Length: 236
Image (cartoon, rainbow, N blue to C red; front, side, top):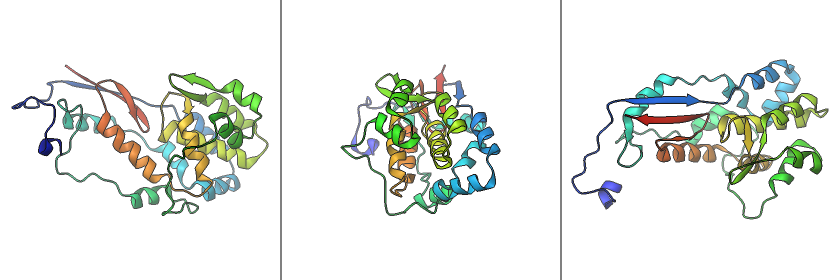
């Protein structure tokens, strides 16, 4: 569309790839999440599956660094984004729905951020069952947003007497550390808004797709977010 409608590039400009590209991938360590999942008996796991689908299997998906070496050839320095020509790489909502396999999700009920929503504090209190004082003490400021450390969530999962709250916090941790990571070993406040709406049986799939496309089209030559990992693309 930019080429058809015009853009800010100088007329006659030809985009060229750099001779050398170094790709560095960093992601959250999921070992502690795996250990918690492995410790749970079948009854607890089935309760999790019935509420959140196959979400835990994301913990066992390995990132193939070689794929990023292949992806680097599609980086367009002129537009500072990846361009794939006429190749159709659009994953469908149906495919993502099949991957999550959550019976509680209603396909035609899509998540959208409401104007008036509970505060991060209130959402965490509702999800974790902790008191206002305890939640307030654990909230951290990270730039222009707030977050809660994974360590605090892990301790809560291990010690919480309510099984349903355990799996709720565990699911929140997967969404925050695996699906929508922003700061290593922390769950960002924006994730809790989506998570809070899951109780109303909305599907998170369009949001996951939107975040994927946003990341693909706005990767910069810097350290930025891309779903389950952070990516740095450096050209020489």
